[in-house]
Image (spheres, helix red, strand yellow):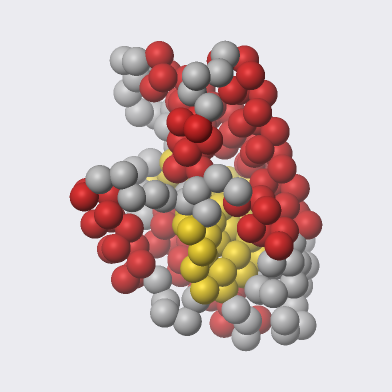
Length: 194
């Protein structure tokens, strides 16, 4: 790994559907990697569940630089980050929302309070892994609180979990960027950052 120009940063990019958050995060990851002459690891949390999702995944694969390493990790993202400590200069995880959905669906038969506790623990573990990494780490997530109120109990549980998870990640991150209509709005900055 190359000598870093500054302290590694934990950056959280959040926004609504089609707000430009993934493109922004990819461009930022590319810039950070170029500054450090380093390697990028892309952690994908999406799983193929139907033809439409397969097409989305294929599109996103084509959009990423070919020189980036990509791993697909639906649930064990914290372990993936920790296992690669020191191997990459930039790690981009896209996206937290699918990570949370995968966790929720894997335990949806459990009582709600147990689900919420376990997911909170996993999100905190993921943030700790990002902080322990020697790389600049970027997480991408959807802001679900501005959308319609879900009609189903499972949908409402997901919206609650995602909102709380975003709060935990935003508190742990050095920087938070909110995307609106393709425009980044920095809503939290690391003191003394460039």
